[in-house]
Length: 263
Image (cartoon, rainbow, N blue to C red; front, side, top):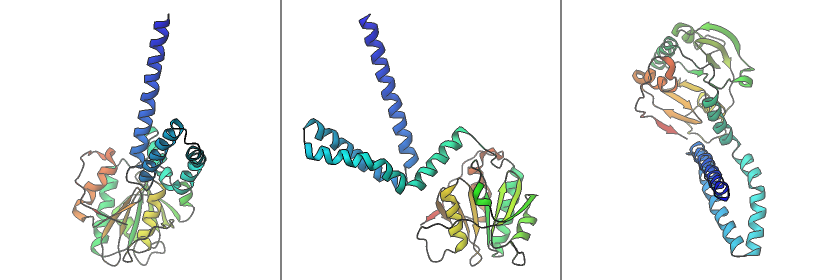
């Protein structure tokens, strides 16, 4: 009987350790490349020192670390709320896939429009919704509900259009809204980057959307994804690059990204 209890206890302990290891592994994956990564390593060191001070009976040090660790959770939530939100978005994307664009034709039309606007230096800002619904970010703008086409997109961003200064939001295979005002990032960006770029990265920090920017000064194409800007996207590779983020459009091939991230 004691042997059975011991075995069950050992299995439970091993299972417990396995779960904790998996949780820690995924936490590290989620914060990798974010500001919170170094913070977590620092907290890990503090936790080790905490247990050492407990074992060594270093009363003052143990008391100080106990008070610090008691408030560190609130500190992390306040300071790294954007990183936490982005990590939760990724978790939700894996658990509950949403109405991401699945039409190869729609991506073709978007890429075609962007390439033509890049050639003519027509400033534009196109938001392609993925699994996370944009919700409150769509309070502004005009509802369009039109099939995605190169002609419609280029008409919207024509300087004579009243909606050319805002963003176009693509949901599924439809142009959902135009003239949408997006939140601006608080990051320090290069002075050469304008309001469209700030708006693109501002939304990319809050959602999992893929945002395409065409500069009206240079015609350069930039992508904003997961809080980062990827500049100098080549027109002839844009469609293949977009397929990476929308693998259900009939081609799952991964392209070799040669973009340069700007911050």
